[in-house]
Amino acid sequence: MEAMNMDVFFMQKALQEANLALEKEEVPVGAVVVVDGRIIAKSHNLTELLTDVTAHAEMQAITAAANFLGGKYLKKCTIYVTLEPCAMCAGALYWSQIDRVVFGASDPKRGFEALGVPLHPKTQVTKGILEEECASLMWNFFQKKRK
Image 1 (cartoon, rainbow, N blue to C red):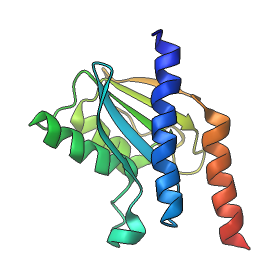
Image 2 (spheres, helix red, strand yellow):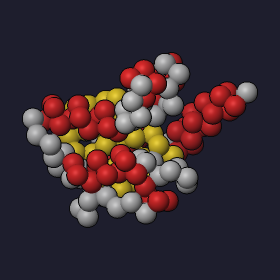
Image 3 (tube, rainbow, N blue to C red):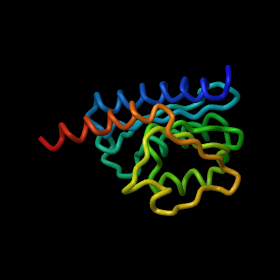
Image 4 (tube, rainbow, N blue to C red):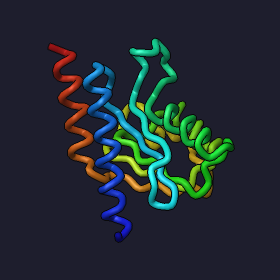
């Protein structure tokens, strides 16, 4: 399977996770961690359920992936996340030394790029995969919240 098709496939899995968050009335962000074409961790936002501001999808997925691998570094791994990681999650991704970050929708207010937060120098970033689907999920969620 070519790289772009793999990115779409795994972002669809992250969107499934985001929809699980939506069902729990969480901000609908989902993430999956992949190594060698295999999902080793998946999660979604759990901040409301756990009453923990750090329980972002990425943080949950990083922890699950590290536990699966038996070590703190996520070298050779890719994280697919429906929304551009925030500064906190970007910091955790930096320390994990993850090879690649792929995200769907940009976050111009709180995203790591907008805030100038660096990832690890060896981390590659791909953005805009299923961007419309990811952005519309967030937009619809916040429209309902504002009513």
